[in-house]
Each structure stands twice: as structure tokens, then as C-alpha cells.
Image 1 (cartoon, rainbow, N blue to C red):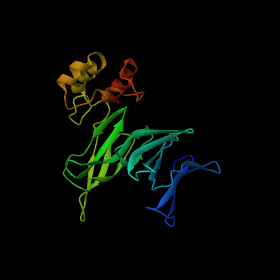
Image 2: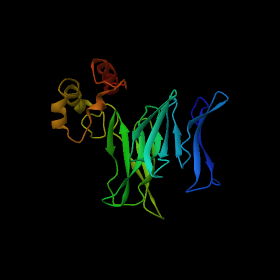
Image 3: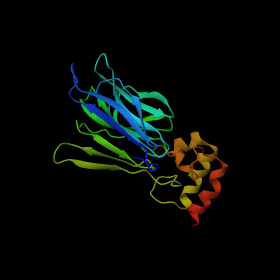
Image 4: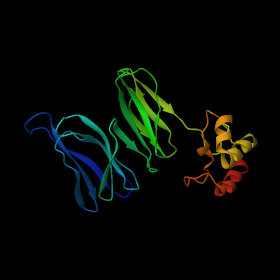
Length: 219
């Protein structure tokens, strides 16, 4: 459910014949129910954000195998990845999801943001699952069996260019490097992210971030 009243859901049919149960992905919008996917096999784990972007797990109707995460927007469906499931969206279009790792026999939490796939968890656990994400790109997920832990991966705040947990004068050099010399910034602050200089959240680090950065320094 998003703030516009759109609802994405799975219509299950556990009585269908043949292998496994069946399902359809549906969207309720403006009093109308749309079918987004009808492959007739085990699609599920739906999510929708306030921009109208939808995501769900999908399966191949022939092989009966999970084929990853599908996205839908304004009538167009695309395959985000063929190796993930249980996606969760934020309103920026970032996606947290699970991925099964054959080599370690473990589930890991991953993030798709700004066109990049990033692995968030590393533990050798079969239960790094059920991720959630907010608009800051903070992540949380369940780890371990009962009793299980909740892991919280919190991002450094915008403007914290040296990643010390504070926004102060010591961030000025990092901000200038992120703005004018991104490669040098990466060399000097390998554990930070130049995107933290995108203070106005428009997707670019540029001169339009200077004034809001100054406002962070001198609120």
C-alpha cells in the first residue's frame, strides 16, 4: 500500500492441478484491479512505493525455478535481476532484497541503488532475510534462526564526507574533493561515499550542493 491508495498483492490459488501452487500479481488503482503478471506459477512478495513503482518475485512457468525480481511502472515490466527475491522498495526507487549464495549455502542481503548492486551482509547465515529499507538507504534484516537478531545497517548522513559520524568543518576538504576531484576523494576516503555530497538529493554532486552543504555546517 502506498500513500496514493494503490495496493499491490498476490492472488493465490492453492487448488490448481499440476506442480506447485499458482498465483497472479495484481494492482488495485483508482477503483480498478490490473493484472501485472499471470505466469500461473508461484509469483509473490509484492512491494510498491509512492512513485508507483512495483516489484515482486517471479518464477519461470516451464522450469518452475525462481527467475528473480521484476519491476513494473506505467504498464511496462522489466527484469531487475535473475538471482534475487523478497524485494522491498523505498520512495527513491532503491531496492533491498535477498540473494541465495550457492558457494556458502547462505542467504545474503543486497541493495540495488543508483544503478549498482551492493552486498550488504557477509555472515555465513542461512537466515539473512526479510530486508527493509528507508529513504535514507538505511537497511535492516533478520539474521539467524530462533532466537534471531535484527541487523541495522545505517548510512552516514549527507554531508558527513569523512564518515566520522559528525557534520562539521572537518568535512569541508572531503566535500571539495567529492565536488571537484572524485577519484582523489575515493583514494583519501576509501570507506566513504562521494554521494554523501549530494546534499540536495538530485542524483548529482555539483555546484547546487554547495549552499545546502553550508546550511548543514551552519544551521
